[in-house]
Length: 453
Image (cartoon, rainbow, N blue to C red; front, side, top):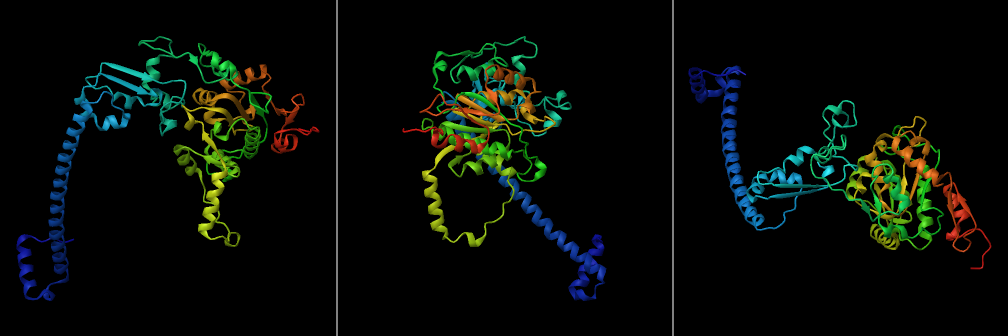
């Protein structure tokens, strides 16, 4: 756009005052641009001044809030916050002069986040966690993870807790204390992680008297099958793996255990490594139970959810209010059942854990279930019993899975059929190898023997 010199501008303005239509087209265009720049320049200057005033006011408000927080925190005995909140409020916390910092689940905290806790006043840092469980979460796994070839030079998912533990050399440079007595799992479950990751683990005497699961011959069992997984390319569940056969088998097993009348559905949890399988399990189990997901699993599930077809209008004649009321009544009569992905169940437990492993393929790919951290979480959630449903051949080449499978084989706890029993005819063996076998061979938690009870 053409711009004016000061003398040219005065001339054009003088002519414009007399009759603007006498100006040349180029002069009129340049004049419009001049006025536009003049107006927007004033607006921008006023906006800049306003923004500066807002920033000054915000700084003043923040200082007032910090002063209030400083006085409140200074009188507190214990301050609880996340590492992110600590970094955001570092100036306030430095003035508190805290001498001791305790970090829970330290093995999941990024090392950079942990460094923000090193305030000048800190004299004692206590890290609590388990570096054999989940590592810190990073977005660019292939670029920066310990397990990727390119990421080994960065290892951003190696926590400070893991680094200080010195597990790679066995040389501990700082004092380390480990809890070796476990009070959760029956010995048949704990031996799977004791013989692989925790050689010093000791079972508390109370774990040796945990009850058996009624209707099941084994408290710990791997049900082996060769039914193939559904690949992500099928497009049925977004980009996550799933296995339709395992959905049916898991649902049938859950119903069988609950029919025995000893365990409530709230005492059972169904675990799976994939959000796609979680979604299919929720859909199948929702017919009989009020399925509960954690907030983290709801987010994970939503990320894989595809838009479903809308129901046909003719199949839905009930008014909305009546339909919602009936659905609410149905939910009230359903028992609550928790399902979760493995990563989002760390730190939790259940009396009975049923695990759908999903992967079943010719190339024996198990993806992230090859890491000892996730295998450890998966195998250490159950208290009374644990049932794994998956293709053992797919997992057998992974070192830790191989050890687990060998231990299960020694205990005769792996096979292609679940062994059930009837409470009234306990000597009668009931073998089920298909989902429909539960209802056929063990109807109403019993068996097919003639019975007057």
